Amino acid sequence: MKFVAIFFCIWLFGIKLASAEKLSLVELSNYFNRFDTFQADFQQFSDDGSLASGVILIKKPGRLRIDYERPEDLLILASGGQLAIFDPKGDPEPTSFPLNVTPFSIVLKSQINLAGSSNILSHEYSQGETSLSLYDPKYPERGHIKLIFSGETPILDRWLIQDESGNITMMSIERYKENIDLGEMQFNIPLEIERRRN
Image 1 (cartoon, rainbow, N blue to C red):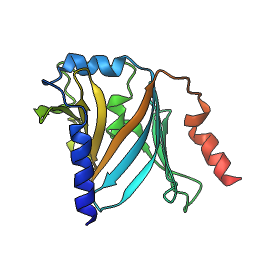
Image 2: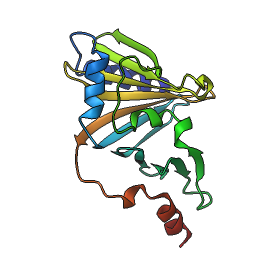
Image 3: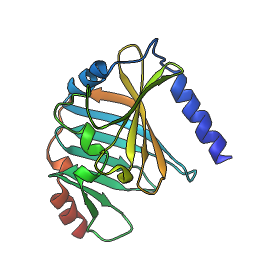
Protein backbone atom coordinates (compact mmCIF):
# COMPACT_ATOMS: atom_id res chain seq x y z
CA MET A 1 0.00 0.00 0.00
CA LYS A 2 2.89 2.35 0.73
CA PHE A 3 4.19 1.90 -2.81
CA VAL A 4 0.76 2.80 -4.23
CA ALA A 5 0.75 6.02 -2.19
CA ILE A 6 4.29 6.89 -3.26
CA PHE A 7 3.65 6.41 -6.97
CA PHE A 8 0.38 8.33 -6.73
CA CYS A 9 2.28 11.25 -5.16
CA ILE A 10 4.96 11.04 -7.87
CA TRP A 11 2.23 11.16 -10.52
CA LEU A 12 0.63 14.21 -8.92
CA PHE A 13 3.97 16.04 -8.71
CA GLY A 14 4.63 15.21 -12.33
CA ILE A 15 1.45 16.77 -13.77
CA LYS A 16 1.25 20.05 -11.89
CA LEU A 17 3.27 22.31 -14.22
CA ALA A 18 3.89 20.61 -17.53
CA SER A 19 6.27 22.14 -20.06
CA ALA A 20 5.23 22.52 -23.70
CA GLU A 21 8.59 21.32 -25.02
CA LYS A 22 11.95 19.99 -23.92
CA LEU A 23 14.07 22.53 -22.01
CA SER A 24 17.50 23.01 -23.58
CA LEU A 25 20.81 22.55 -21.78
CA VAL A 26 21.36 26.31 -22.08
CA GLU A 27 18.02 27.00 -20.37
CA LEU A 28 18.84 24.52 -17.60
CA SER A 29 22.33 26.04 -17.14
CA ASN A 30 20.76 29.49 -16.87
CA TYR A 31 18.35 28.16 -14.25
CA PHE A 32 21.18 27.00 -11.99
CA ASN A 33 23.29 30.09 -12.62
CA ARG A 34 20.53 32.56 -11.74
CA PHE A 35 20.74 31.85 -8.00
CA ASP A 36 23.50 31.72 -5.40
CA THR A 37 21.25 30.59 -2.55
CA PHE A 38 18.19 28.37 -2.47
CA GLN A 39 15.74 27.30 0.23
CA ALA A 40 12.84 24.87 -0.07
CA ASP A 41 10.67 22.43 1.83
CA PHE A 42 10.85 18.84 0.65
CA GLN A 43 9.03 15.55 0.82
CA GLN A 44 11.23 12.47 0.44
CA PHE A 45 10.09 9.08 -0.84
CA SER A 46 12.50 6.14 -0.51
CA ASP A 47 12.24 2.87 -2.39
CA ASP A 48 11.78 1.00 0.89
CA GLY A 49 8.42 2.78 1.30
CA SER A 50 9.53 5.29 3.93
CA LEU A 51 8.48 8.94 3.85
CA ALA A 52 10.28 11.96 5.31
CA SER A 53 10.14 15.76 5.13
CA GLY A 54 12.27 18.75 5.99
CA VAL A 55 14.09 21.79 4.66
CA ILE A 56 16.93 22.06 2.16
CA LEU A 57 19.34 24.99 1.94
CA ILE A 58 21.94 25.61 -0.78
CA LYS A 59 24.63 28.25 -0.79
CA LYS A 60 26.96 28.11 -3.76
CA PRO A 61 29.63 27.16 -4.17
CA GLY A 62 29.76 23.87 -2.32
CA ARG A 63 27.44 24.36 0.64
CA LEU A 64 24.35 22.30 1.36
CA ARG A 65 22.13 21.63 4.37
CA ILE A 66 19.35 19.04 4.41
CA ASP A 67 17.48 19.15 7.71
CA TYR A 68 15.02 16.32 8.30
CA GLU A 69 12.06 16.78 10.61
CA ARG A 70 11.21 14.31 13.36
CA PRO A 71 11.21 11.42 13.79
CA GLU A 72 14.26 11.11 11.50
CA ASP A 73 16.10 14.22 12.77
CA LEU A 74 18.84 13.42 10.27
CA LEU A 75 21.13 16.26 9.19
CA ILE A 76 23.26 16.36 6.04
CA LEU A 77 25.82 19.14 5.71
CA ALA A 78 28.22 19.95 2.89
CA SER A 79 30.98 22.54 3.13
CA GLY A 80 34.74 22.74 2.79
CA GLY A 81 34.74 19.96 0.21
CA GLN A 82 33.16 17.47 2.63
CA LEU A 83 29.69 15.97 2.98
CA ALA A 84 28.77 14.97 6.54
CA ILE A 85 25.78 12.91 7.68
CA PHE A 86 24.77 13.40 11.32
CA ASP A 87 22.70 10.61 12.89
CA PRO A 88 20.82 11.86 15.98
CA LYS A 89 20.94 8.38 17.49
CA GLY A 90 24.65 7.87 16.93
CA ASP A 91 28.03 9.39 17.63
CA PRO A 92 28.46 13.20 17.51
CA GLU A 93 31.05 12.56 14.81
CA PRO A 94 29.33 12.36 11.44
CA THR A 95 29.85 9.90 8.64
CA SER A 96 31.86 11.93 6.11
CA PHE A 97 32.70 11.71 2.43
CA PRO A 98 34.56 13.97 0.01
CA LEU A 99 31.87 16.07 -1.66
CA ASN A 100 33.30 15.35 -5.10
CA VAL A 101 32.37 11.65 -4.85
CA THR A 102 28.66 12.55 -4.47
CA PRO A 103 26.19 13.70 -7.15
CA PHE A 104 25.66 16.96 -5.23
CA SER A 105 29.09 18.27 -6.22
CA ILE A 106 27.89 18.94 -9.77
CA VAL A 107 24.91 21.12 -8.86
CA LEU A 108 26.73 23.01 -6.10
CA LYS A 109 29.23 24.66 -8.43
CA SER A 110 29.12 28.46 -8.61
CA GLN A 111 28.56 28.35 -12.38
CA ILE A 112 27.33 25.45 -14.49
CA ASN A 113 27.70 25.03 -18.25
CA LEU A 114 25.79 21.91 -19.24
CA ALA A 115 26.22 22.25 -22.99
CA GLY A 116 28.85 19.68 -23.92
CA SER A 117 29.38 18.64 -20.30
CA SER A 118 30.80 15.15 -19.73
CA ASN A 119 28.66 14.89 -16.57
CA ILE A 120 25.42 14.37 -18.51
CA LEU A 121 24.15 10.81 -18.38
CA SER A 122 20.83 11.62 -20.09
CA HIS A 123 18.71 14.61 -21.17
CA GLU A 124 15.14 13.55 -21.88
CA TYR A 125 11.60 14.81 -22.35
CA SER A 126 8.49 12.87 -21.38
CA GLN A 127 4.89 13.74 -20.50
CA GLY A 128 5.56 17.47 -20.37
CA GLU A 129 8.70 17.26 -18.23
CA THR A 130 12.42 17.64 -18.93
CA SER A 131 14.77 15.39 -16.98
CA LEU A 132 18.53 15.71 -16.66
CA SER A 133 20.67 12.95 -15.17
CA LEU A 134 24.15 13.90 -13.97
CA TYR A 135 27.04 11.68 -12.91
CA ASP A 136 30.82 11.50 -12.77
CA PRO A 137 31.93 9.53 -15.85
CA LYS A 138 35.18 8.61 -14.11
CA TYR A 139 33.23 6.88 -11.33
CA PRO A 140 29.87 5.77 -12.78
CA GLU A 141 29.52 3.20 -10.01
CA ARG A 142 28.97 6.02 -7.50
CA GLY A 143 25.47 6.62 -8.79
CA HIS A 144 23.78 9.65 -10.28
CA ILE A 145 21.25 12.39 -9.66
CA LYS A 146 18.22 12.87 -11.92
CA LEU A 147 16.75 16.38 -11.90
CA ILE A 148 13.19 16.80 -13.16
CA PHE A 149 11.93 20.18 -14.35
CA SER A 150 8.45 21.44 -15.16
CA GLY A 151 7.10 24.68 -16.60
CA GLU A 152 7.93 26.60 -19.76
CA THR A 153 10.73 28.29 -17.85
CA PRO A 154 12.65 25.79 -15.68
CA ILE A 155 11.26 24.98 -12.26
CA LEU A 156 13.03 22.22 -10.35
CA ASP A 157 10.15 19.99 -9.34
CA ARG A 158 11.93 16.98 -7.85
CA TRP A 159 15.08 14.90 -8.03
CA LEU A 160 15.95 11.24 -7.73
CA ILE A 161 19.27 9.98 -6.41
CA GLN A 162 20.48 6.49 -7.20
CA ASP A 163 23.35 5.54 -4.92
CA GLU A 164 26.16 3.07 -5.54
CA SER A 165 24.02 0.25 -4.15
CA GLY A 166 21.21 0.97 -6.60
CA ASN A 167 18.86 2.40 -3.97
CA ILE A 168 16.66 5.22 -5.26
CA THR A 169 15.43 8.18 -3.22
CA MET A 170 13.05 10.81 -4.60
CA MET A 171 12.80 14.31 -3.15
CA SER A 172 10.00 16.65 -4.23
CA ILE A 173 10.71 20.38 -3.93
CA GLU A 174 8.04 22.70 -2.53
CA ARG A 175 7.75 26.40 -1.59
CA TYR A 176 11.22 27.28 -2.78
CA LYS A 177 12.94 30.67 -2.57
CA GLU A 178 16.01 31.87 -4.45
CA ASN A 179 18.74 34.41 -3.65
CA ILE A 180 17.86 34.84 0.00
CA ASP A 181 20.26 35.71 2.81
CA LEU A 182 21.85 32.57 4.28
CA GLY A 183 24.65 32.72 6.86
CA GLU A 184 27.78 30.59 7.01
CA MET A 185 27.06 29.07 10.45
CA GLN A 186 24.30 26.85 9.09
CA PHE A 187 26.82 24.98 6.93
CA ASN A 188 29.68 24.72 9.44
CA ILE A 189 30.51 21.03 10.00
CA PRO A 190 33.05 21.46 12.86
CA LEU A 191 30.61 23.78 14.67
CA GLU A 192 27.84 21.18 14.39
CA ILE A 193 30.16 18.47 15.76
CA GLU A 194 31.06 20.68 18.72
CA ARG A 195 27.40 21.51 19.38
CA ARG A 196 26.48 17.83 19.51
CA ARG A 197 29.30 17.03 21.92
CA ASN A 198 28.10 19.58 24.47
